[in-house]
Image 1 (cartoon, helix red, strand yellow):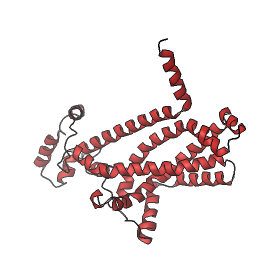
Image 2 (image 1 turned 60 degrees about the vertical axis):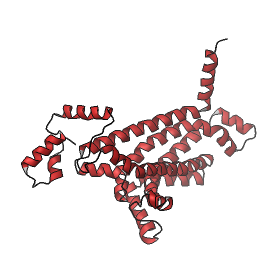
Image 3 (image 1 turned 180 degrees about the vertical axis):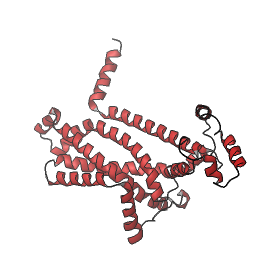
Image 4 (image 1 turned 135 degrees about the horizontal axis):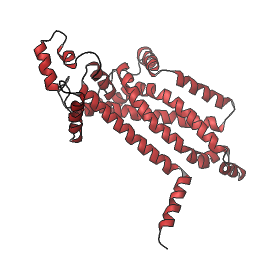
Length: 299
């Protein structure tokens, strides 16, 4: 942001602004100081819980992010739920019916999903469901005060546009993880004892295959947040992604820094939780943990 051509003060005041006013604004924003000094001052404010004030909106950055998070957080949650809700059954079905027509169909659809850009898919969804069928709004967000129904109807198309490519990736990961687990000896033993393929998968293969699946879900959260920058702009949603896009366009450095820091911290926390769940979900890991605890107990 700091090395891009142009002066943020000139962007805010306009190209025809008085040079004295531009210099005064640069001093007020601290842009006349060296970059290390600017960063140190901002970091000191962050450690004290102050993310600074937006130069464009003249309000605290924290208030802006919290105001927009009521759109972006439900959108990200919907995207994750749709991705997992589509990918898990599809991946399981493909693994159970591997090397058959169902497996080939699911794999082909997943490959197509990987090839579709979210922006193009979002525009197609708007045309089909908002322009032609007129069942959902084309864009905008009425607010949660208007009711859960209208709010969710405004978020469903963006959530689908975000989730479809991620569901395609997760479907392939799920299929691969389940197929590898099905080739293990414990699944073969369960089948020899009379369990059906679906029963062996649900009881034995799936719990052992959840670790890589949960890891990918955690990584996908970061892609969903990054993709929201474009999707929220396409659907005119007043979320954190669109706020970041506008802040970059307006050279609002305080907002950009605050949003990026919050987003990165959120992705780190979500990935850590998913990694913990991946370890906890693995029966072998839980058994090893119990064995370690038993060894540590005094005789």
